[in-house]
Image (cartoon, rainbow, N blue to C red):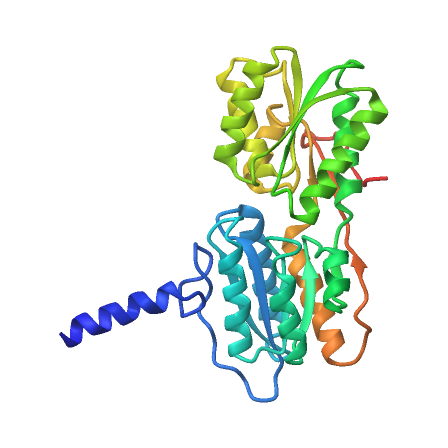
Length: 332
């Protein structure tokens, strides 16, 4: 009975995010004991099933290793992109553990505001990265939260411009957007639409694949059947681009239907090189959390006001061969 009780207790512990699950997988990292007098920063991300956030976590850990005497770090992530309630629970857990600051990539631009308001009321510094919190919701809650991240609309517009240059005017294109309530999903969709409107393309459909590869694959297959003249799929992240490229290949239309993405994850680079993905945007995920952590430390030390900070984003296309220039450019 004692062994059974311990086994059940272990399961209960793992069911509550942050109770020592291994890092780098589907659960949060083990929570280190706090160091007296040292600020404790919690990094709360979206899905650790997405390579982009694994890269983000790795970048944060490397920064901490190089600055271990300056702060303690707790790294957490949710199981999938749409599990908003789990992310709220992670923030609540970090408050219970009395962290000094929370650096968060919110799964939803509105739903996380109430729990972050409680964090600020408890004196916890909050820094928003990756996906911007909704300005009107923040205003209604009386919150000021600095955003540290790229201009997603400009990045998507630049990727869309690369695509437009490869298509005839008036070509039919479709957009695969992320979770519609996420600010970065909205901005990337708008950036793609900007580029397509400027180039005179026809956007025949905008569908949400909720950032997920499998959903993007199924939606892309349906779009290819519904629109036989479709010439491009613009995916708002690289996970969806991978799903779209697979659907194009399964339909036997590689080379006929172009695919673009956003994030420059490692899994998409081979597809860039072999032409199955035309372009993506690199928002330097390995540094994005670092920018947020450094901002939080500056605020904690009273070295900087809680202001927004725009981070770089670059267009990436096929990697050059020996002696060739890189096909990459910053968005305009």
